[in-house]
Length: 164
View (cartoon, rainbow, N blue to C red):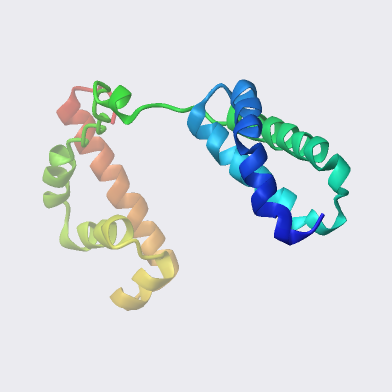
């Protein structure tokens, strides 16, 4: 078939191809989209199509495009954004109460409180803490163990032995 005859072929067959696709897709907007895609595919191969079988070829393209469209559409769930307006807002987790921990840290000797602060609030490694304090890594480990032991004891006393 010659490209010059495409417009004539399109105007002659557009409605019946659209109706065929509409019966397959059951949606006017989808049928319009698939019809357009089918005619584009037809036009891309127009040089190799025999004019006597052009209509049959067009129906085959329309069927294949429709089935592909239906399969792809089935993969997605269509929801109206209005359906989500009544969903509850995401619940933010409650911020833990660290007031007892901060109070217990204030009672620690300055060197122990400093080590805990550097490790947990500044997120420094033992090596980095040791270089800041001008001491050894073993000394920092020892200070951390003592500070944690004292904190645990103070927090257990405050909570009445319920655990930390």
